[in-house]
Image (cartoon, rainbow, N blue to C red):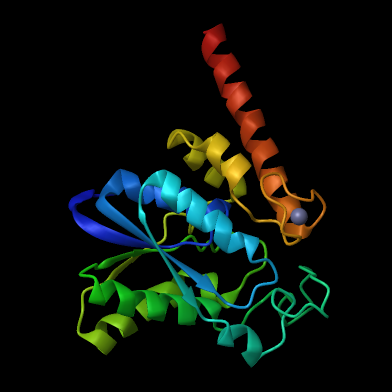
Length: 230
Ligand code: ZN
């Protein structure tokens, strides 16, 4: 990808594995990086603390915005404590961890914020390869929204999705290449039970994260051994 060293970028930032990897990807490509973290009524406010800590360590601007109305619009297990989180996908439907409209609201709000701050590059860690198949993580949605936002504000936003076609193992590989594998592993929060780093170990999010890490570390070991044998 081209680098935009003279330009600013805004990372939609949750303090999890994906958006933290995106933050460091952005630091590699842009001259000045800002982060925007949303509260959507998630059960674990520790997420927001993690995001703030990581942003501070990276030396980037951190902004928090409360959008908890999203959680109150519909029922989902990320915001409703009476629903048990379940990532299984009922036929023709979505897992109960799906928060309808979340990325639509997040990216639309991020675009307004970016415009007000003279930023045209917006970065989000969505991935189509991800297990759940959330419709607002798909490439077609992001491209469509990009056009809509440009029309809505007569702007030239570019939404970057560096993880769109990567699986979890490849996302770990990117973090490693960026020199932040340990930071992502120890300081980010992806666990549905709100435990930092390797997490609770048994929720679907922890499982996905760990399987990806194991797969990546195995492949790294292999490629390092095969090089030394040559
Ligand atoms: Zn967990």
